[in-house]
Image (cartoon, rainbow, N blue to C red; front, side, top):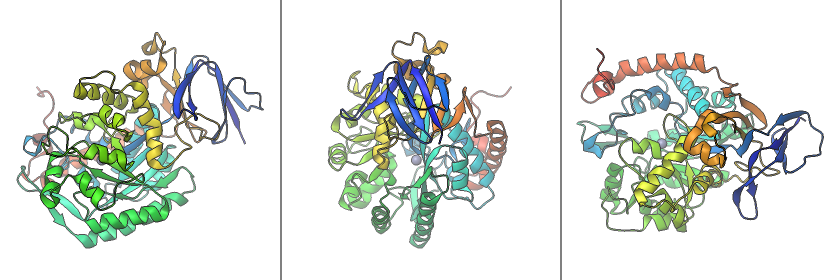
Length: 486
Ligand SMILES: [Zn+2]
């Protein structure tokens, strides 16, 4: 047993279990024995093996990234940030981005495993360096996935995706569905084996989540059986829902109602379910639908929402609004979905876009967004021992440098961190009591080596684009450089 104490923390964000909220405290000791916090308050008097001077530190709970795709997104850096198809309501998901990422990630048996691992190493590095200590990794299972995740040192929830249909874009203005129920069933069985393996992983930091991929690509029976499998295992379920206008229209065409209302009809909503994105609800202005039921329905059923503002903002889209969802009583959680996997920038983006969408500064405030990035996430995951600093909780801790110039003046350090310094001021990170970031460097991952492998993987993905794209365009035609190369 090793006992570590962060002595006399200049500032700390502790969990007030009675009020169920984070609060600031000053000049406190935070002690943890191996993986568990044993003390959070003044004057720790127990035996100490390692003492850290906390005078110039903000000590905060590690955040939870409830929705991202580690295996693919970093491969698209410099390619996907400005893609969008106007004929598909600006989304790049179905054709432009998919020729780089979905094509890549949906074919794990074609020699891309090294690329998946490199992308995962880089993604997890970014999460840790920005104060995230838990990640929900939505991936198509590939060889070595669980061991690779565990080796990064992060706490990970493996969410192996499967589906009954895949999207096909033949002309650039229409998404078609190619159904293969039997293949979906086989992938479902394989995914459950991965979920069960995660729970047994010797690292003790992995768990699983049942993850039918998208509301529009999974049959009703596959969704119902997915929920049954989740309930049987006591695990949460996650599915992308209301992530594009195209998807909303398709579900309205099939069922005459919104994707959220259809999921309610088939029993999928509830405290066990985390919906990915859920931006294009019936009341969203791009959708133009007549009902106003989705947001209240999500609150009434205690369904959680994984809000990932950055990726949609690149298409000119926003939730309407994060603040309105919070005030309606929905359990909101935050994810990055894409690169950069910067939890602190994601928090800031969530706040800024919410204010623009609602024309209201006070509808949602930093305390709400920080709650979403921590306890909102753990509520969605069914964990009450993560993302809070209190005795008994896991020692997933982030130490921020109050002396960093970008934090000055450090009058309100959480504001300084989110609105100004972001990941630059994150200094040390502990997951399960083990230090994984030291003086701003990830100790568990060789980022330089991962970067080289990632660049090679990007070249391979770009070379394959003409074979995947419906118009046989090259990668440079789909995504030209931002400036002409003279
Ligand atoms: Zn996603």
